[in-house]
Length: 273
Image (cartoon, rainbow, N blue to C red; front, side):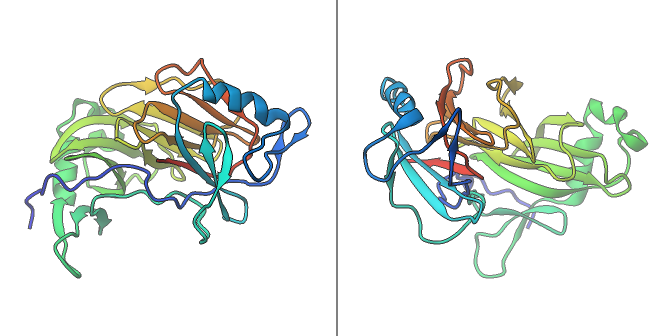
């Protein structure tokens, strides 16, 4: 029951269940993107800029009522969106999940789970990390998983809570059953984690802030934008879309200084094929 099964993690924001604030393109005036292939006002500039890049795919987003809408890149042409309502993207986990504080896999049939990392194993992994000495109780005590996202085959990010110090949450990256990265003091009680399409990056989502890390490296610099609240990556992770209150900023994932502003207010968004 405790043997980890590899090859089951499939990453990508393929589910088009995200949300965005639909209505107004508020910028320096009230500009809008009209239905159909024609663009007007402030939309014309981003269409020209996007057309000069290889950024392609469909941005699906939702409004404040969690109704879904979609735009085809690079022309920002409205296309059919899923008819249901959803406020956030559906993020595939490859069958992995959290059950009673343990990382489990549930791909063998109805009501069948397989423990990938037990609470005891999670706790032992934290205790064995040199950074644990900086934690409350010197890293002693039990830890349990509260969030999880898949980052690729045999790799996943887990949020861990200390039973005696719930204010001290940890963000850990595992390769199989091996702890490969531990981050202290970066995630709060209301934060969530989101993986990029291929698992190359993952983001900490806060109500008015987004912080991005490379799965195999350090923090990723984002454009200077006021109060970002949502993020999505192109299917190949080469492009990033960062949402603020009034705009979506599209930029090469490795060159955050080359932004293209789409004057569209969204609640949340996804970037699919």
